[in-house]
Image (cartoon, rainbow, N blue to C red; front, top):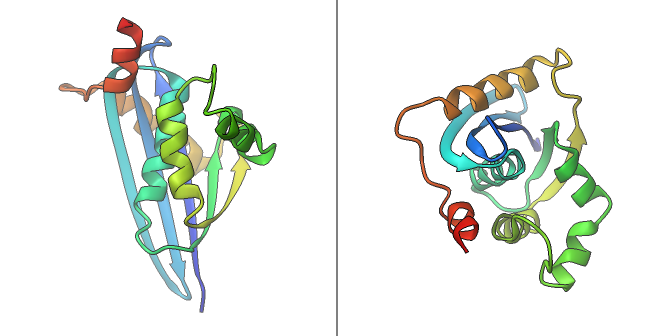
Length: 159
């Protein structure tokens, strides 16, 4: 039997930039067995797109075995279009010249090539229960005390 993995993700920020967070719901199916992981984290100063992308990265990082079949569900057209329209490879050839979130895109590419990943776009706030759950996770994470620091983003803003 083959393992099937679904990763649902969402990211948010209050203000853009501002406090932000991500939420991830991972489903792992192996025959009749089922496992899930729920992950969320908040940052004190970041952007919505960084949190959307970081949620996908963290979700993929949680899959330890290589060459897995993974379906990623996100409401971020920023991510889906970049992958499905193969913009990511054009950006990579130009070393991401004039692109935002270069640190995260490079981190993503290292993971993306280790698995068989397909992306699906989900319309946000459209009563998809897992996407809505990930949205609540990300918003709640952004409201926590002792938020993490998105060092790369905060450093770039000071230059």
